[in-house]
Length: 163
Image (cartoon, rainbow, N blue to C red; front, top):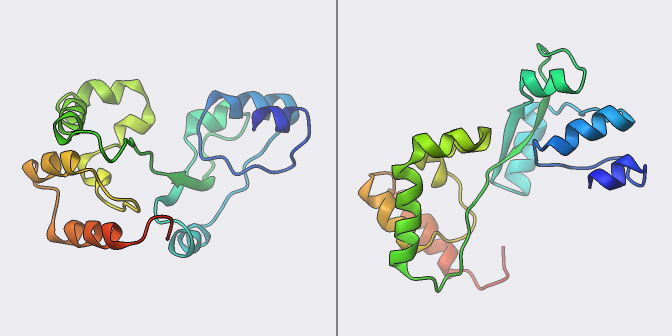
């Protein structure tokens, strides 16, 4: 994506990323963010994709690209997922999820996205089934509710390949 912007083969990109490439492109070809309103992002979320949300660029990123760090620049944010094969053992998945959240303070040091990856967010708005091993951990921690189970069962009942 960044190469297409830098060599001017793309005029616009939809980037769900805060990667360093954005800073590089902004400095080399003058890329700017197109601010989006909360209402516009909510419309897209409801119509197309439940895992996006309204976000604002951080003051540091704004400063890095030569913008006023006090500016409010609305952008599309997207939840990140850890995915696995459905046939991976419940025990392995349980241990992976448990290891992550039992060491959450350490995980948060790996980047901004990790800081916000709370248990509540993990089950907040999923659009593919959650692995039973992960559900076991979420139940133990009290974040898996009857509403989550209803959503899970609805997703499992859909034919594969259908939205």
